[in-house]
Image 1 (spheres, rainbow, N blue to C red):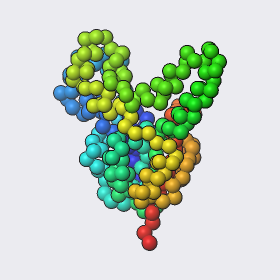
Image 2 (spheres, rainbow, N blue to C red):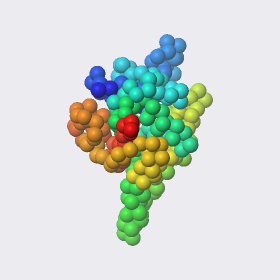
Image 3 (cartoon, helix red, strand yellow):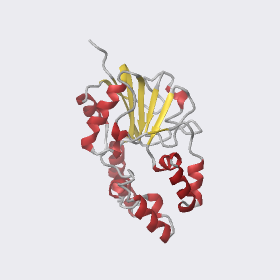
Image 4 (cartoon, helix red, strand yellow):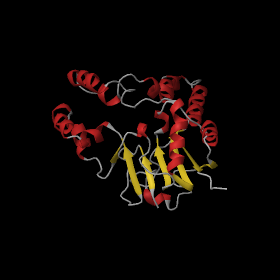
Amino acid sequence: MKILNIGSGTQVCDSPDVIHIDWSFYLRIRKSAVLSAFARVFLDEERRRQLSTLPTGLMVHDLRKGIPFPDNSIDAVYHSHFLEHLDRQDTPRFLTEVCRVLKPGGIHRIVVPDWEQICREYVQHVDRCREKDQAQHHDSYISGMIEQMVRGEAFGTSRQPPVRRWLENLVLGNAQNRGETHRWMYDRINLGCLLADTGYGQITLQQYNRSYVANWSSYGLDQNASGHEYKPGSLYMEAMKPLPN
């Protein structure tokens, strides 16, 4: 079994079945001796700690250059809270690239924020705002819908002291430059249509602990250390690369 975990961040496992691929700024720092030396001066204590505790064995690769594996070589491809960071016009190309590396019958497992659930929670709170004490909390539901779409400054940078904040914005750029912003949102309808249009079959809704990937729960990628759902409020969808006729 060979599984790719694309855009893995720090949510990884130690199974030899799983190859973790990411292009985060922290990984690029660790890969470069020059950037590592710079980071010791530039980064604050908390970020130096995050850098030092990054898992080993991650493949550092810019996915804009494609997935670095041959055709028909991977049993399953997984990514969580990654797809919504791609521009909508780039998404079909990415899904096609995943299909290329999958073996016939291979599984593409996608986890994204569930736009349908986010919208339902917003509308439900509108109804609850008839109660006076609820209205003061309403802006948080709007934030949950659009904050990460319209965010100008990277979240971590916005919490830094003024001088470091200015330097980080100068050197690293804004939230969009760093890939923090959501470029599109998905629900079970538009994601299902997109997968079908890209040539996938057997498109199925799943749960965090359920999958057509054999022994999925044993990898723990959609679970936290306690075994509960790692990203509540997510949509889980799987699709299969068709078998040859």
